[in-house]
Image (cartoon, rainbow, N blue to C red; front, side):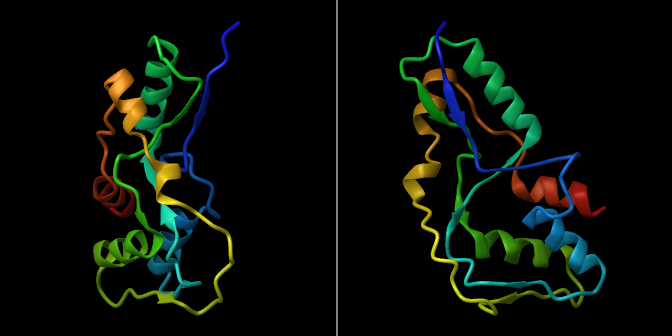
Length: 139
């Protein structure tokens, strides 16, 4: 039986756990808290659960050449960029404290979040952007 290894980084959606960084940040800001982070200078990729599910569907129904693929948003960014966007969308007096904690030392390389080969072989494109997810989550 053929084996296909698909990885992804940070799915977001209806069934998020409250301790996941994106939803935890949103909830903290809603409660008037100031979330604290390390430098947040590591690469991060957020993908909507619906897009991820579609990616898995395509993986299972495509004649893929390789045996490992990354399914992502197509536009990974530094974590601090995602966090800043959350603050911008929440608005008001919302703010975060980036750099409060020291760096955790865990490496994260941009090339690990490259979904271009998967997209090329399956035609996949994430359709739900981070801003759209946030606006839906925050309303």
